Length: 100
Image (cartoon, helix red, strand yellow):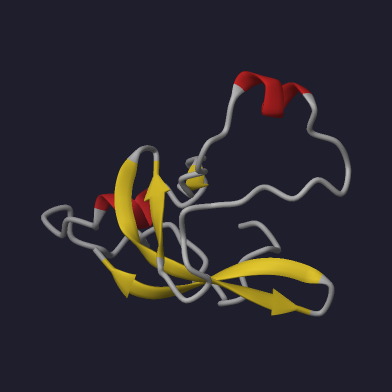
């Protein structure tokens, strides 16, 4: 798991030989290594291709979100929940506020 996630993840362990075959494991527990894409969707007002071409380090882009609004978090384009921005040291992070 990436070091960007602050909560510990339980490690997957192979079932022992004495585990009955009829016991089904949750599919998510069997593939913790499977990569996925997380995305935050923030609408940007009045943004043009010209604005995109002039972006540089230090550019500020106005968004349609109020700073207290929750931002949708998607995993592989599926809505997972809602987040808010948080600052941890000198890093910008998101905190999950509600699951979908």
